[in-house]
Image 1 (cartoon, rainbow, N blue to C red):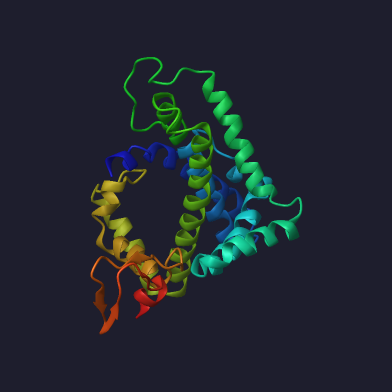
Image 2: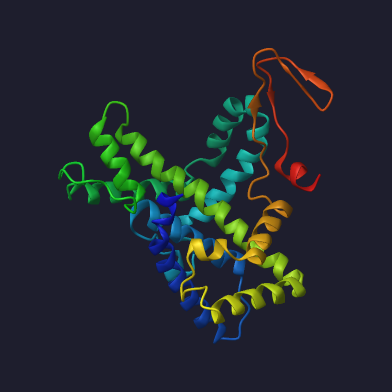
Length: 273
């Protein structure tokens, strides 16, 4: 957790720009798609943490390189195939054939990653310079240092795909969760008022900084309840978390499952059941 907390300055940088954009848009009096802007915020936060450089979603408010569209298309495929995994070898090749020269969003992320790798390679990493790695270094730098230490085990491909995985897995789930929190608060005005009251009280009592830290927000019971209840009502992913039955089998809810069998339960069913 201490390693994650070290990235707070990256989050604050994007939060400041996000607030600036909301302030500018509010002056127009026009409606705003908060789901889109929250995803822009999430993408730039993950980009900054991963590469040490934002992709620029908050600067333009647009889908840079078609990344969002590509991710949406990928998840539409991954959701059913993630459950019926045996279909993947057949459907994946068919999907690529139908898509033709598409996939520009994923290609953009890979291209951006490679350009950042090339740029970072111009400067010696902490390992090459004989210095100790700092916890707040972007993931890309840490990946490159790992590659320098064990190039055969952690290849240049691992460096690229590690960064791409961060962007794919981290941005969408964060954007979805933030959107869900806002949705449920707006749908329940009394809850929104209670949260606002807690925030105001903590500021008055000096328990919150101008830029609230992780440690400070952990001490806010109502805020924590809002976050956890949102995750219960709307899990960031609906895909199951599979487990392999251990040796000897297992009896679960009155049913016996032999060893080696994959079992799972839907996150949504588990949360709402």
